[in-house]
Length: 335
Image (cartoon, rainbow, N blue to C red; front, side):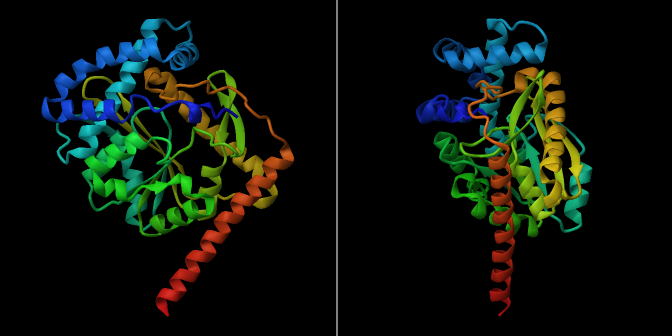
């Protein structure tokens, strides 16, 4: 599995992100977008590993060798979505954007039944666009699972732009049991919980699935959590189409994933393969929206089948423990 993304420094840092935030807020989006061109050139020149990863990925997605111009467009698209976080998270009026939505009716129907929903996403496009949509439905709580320690500058930006959304973040760095319990509590209250399922953390077990022509590693934990909590699962993609346009795509994945212990590896493999297939579909349709700027297909550690089963059983045990702890808390509250 490749965990190289954990070693790469956060793009821009606190100072650069706050500068572009000030330009965007006080001088306007048009001026801020003009600043993206020198920013793109800087990263194209200075961040060699990201540039090479961009070209390698685009060669797969485009079906031809990628050029420096392709890599520049890739970086510019990423920069544009970072800029738009200022508006998507900070403004209640989203009229400046042309946001086109498909498939949200099924999500609303699930929430109307009093059931929380897991929104499984990726680093394809802008997940902030999905949170921006939630602002038009303030009755629906949206909780995001994020590793605050990995992107401290972005975390501080979120806290400044939208303290309410920031307060609802579930910190992925706190450990499997605590995260599972927090997700369980949120979905029991009818919230939408967003999870990104295309990056592997150190020590996390993986399952490989075909993705853009070669097997790639995907984490198993999102699917084990979904199965343990028995909540509806929807795939979500916030695709940036240029200018001020975003396409929000919601695809029902399951009304409740069931994984029996005796066939856990096979059931998990099927979930990951289905997810990777839909991710590839949208990556080919919007190739410059892929924001994993590292070698996604690199295998750092193959691991053993025995270790995989043991770790999966451990995570399933964490989910069981989370359910037991939640029942105990409810009993104490009633008492």
